[in-house]
Structures are given as C-alpha cells and as structure tokens.
Length: 347
Image 1 (cartoon, rainbow, N blue to C red):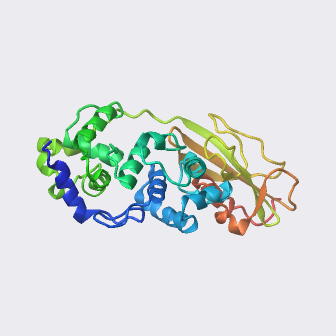
Image 2: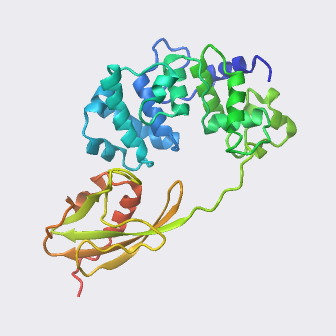
Image 3: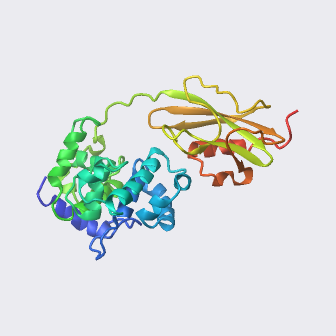
C-alpha cells in the first residue's frame, strides 16, 4: 500500500467524520473524555451505533462521570442497560468503573497493558481507548476495520484464523500521529463506504490502492469460514399474576443475563420443563424465539392468575408498569405475552 494511504484517509475523515455523541470532531480544541470513550466502546461491542446512541445519552445524563457510575447501585445500572444485550458487559462495566475509582483515582490509565488489566477491557477496547482518548499509537481492529483491511490487501485467508494477519496489516498502515482519528476513520469508512454488501467504491478515498477493487470482487472479502449451526435449547417462563402485580425474580449473578430481572423459570436445555413457582391453572401463552451468541432459545411462556400473592421468593412488580422493570429483551418479549393472559378467571 502507498505510504500516503493514511494521510489520504485522514484527509477524507476531516470532511466526512460521523458526528457521534461520544466523539470529539477532528481538529477540535478539546480533548476526548476517556470516560465517554470507554463507555461508548463497551456499549458498541456487538451492538450497532443506532442502538447505542439513546443508551449512551441516558447513561451520560444520569451518570456524567465514572465516579457517579461507580457509586450507583448495581440494580439501577442493570435496569438502565436492559435491552442493550450481552449482559456480561454491564457487570464488567460496573466492576471497571469501581476499579478505575478505587485503583486509579477516577482516571483511566493511558497505556494498553494497564487498561487491559481492568474488568471487561480486552485487546481491542484497550487499543481503542489508548488511541482515541489519549492519542497513543495503537492498532485498533473492529469488524469494520477488519473488513476494510481485508479488502485493501485482498487477504485470501478465511476468518477467524486470519485475524492475526489482519492486525499486522492494519499495524503496517497505522500512523504515529492522529492514531485515534485514523482508527475512527477506518471505522467510518467501513460503515459508510465499505459495508459488507454493495461497497461504494466510487466514493472510497482508498479505491486507487484497494486490491479487492482492482480484482473486481470486493464483496468476496473478508473470506469467512463456513458457520456451524447453533445448538438449540428450550426453556419455560412463568407469568404469575396476583393483585395487579406479577412475580419477578433475579437471574443468577453469573451466566446468561446474570443479575437481571426475569420471569421465574428454570435452566435452559435440550428438553426443559421446570416446575412452576406454585400450583395453579397455567395457560400456554406462546413462545419467544431468541438467538444468543452460542445457541438459539425457544422460551415457552405460561401464565396464571391467583387471587392473593403467595408467600414465595421474588419481587412483585405492578403489571401496568412491567415495561419499566428493566427486563432484558428476552423477558420483555415474554412479558408482552404475559399481558395477553385473559382477564376472566379460569373455569
């Protein structure tokens, strides 16, 4: 690749940089806020920019500093995160905020190795924070950057095995100066000009040096290994209603949806049929299909209404405010089925 490729891309970024609430525009006098950079990077893991923006805005309005976030109750932060998915991130988010306050005086470390020692910060996130928040030269490779690099160099090796090579290729073109802007420019290029399908090569500032475009098959890259089918699991969720409230529980602190509010039910498996919380006239209300990273789940929802709240473990939440309970997406959809429980008592 020509040595001026980074300079060309940065010139493009000066004009076409996306305006994002966590980003400092190129050429701005103010420095990026490491807290906002960190928060956005955690939220953006496996999540789209469009989905993250309203969550980021609410979080920063409610908790404008890492100290404010670290001091908040876990349940409040988890409820605010509900719907954003990948809930191990929010548990690590809380732990990381508290570690930054307790171990670093409320200031994020500037070097990648110290950043990586914090909860929930892996190699990519550490590099992104170091480059974007502190201007350190770091090799930042997310899915957009990965795709752009694979096309620029027409790398024939399939993912995920090709990732070390892709990182080395990105390293070879990352400049010493403006490394954070370069990383964000690569991300913006991948998002706006070089998406997975129908890349807009006529608008690309690097089209003159893109090996995949020169070959005439940019969509062929990055090469991906064949996907294995996801295993399927089953589960049951119980909507138990009494005196205008529904019974909620907390998921175990570790594991899927750890620490989040949920409808009672059991573990998920190949054939799941957990016992209901009480003996009642349970009615089938439908199924919720949900795909996690490593498996697909079919959750059956059963509902019952009893005249008085039984003395059982859990939290009784007003039915009319169920969508304010901070349920993760899976259980919010199950609750929507619960709301279809007929008002008349079973015969």
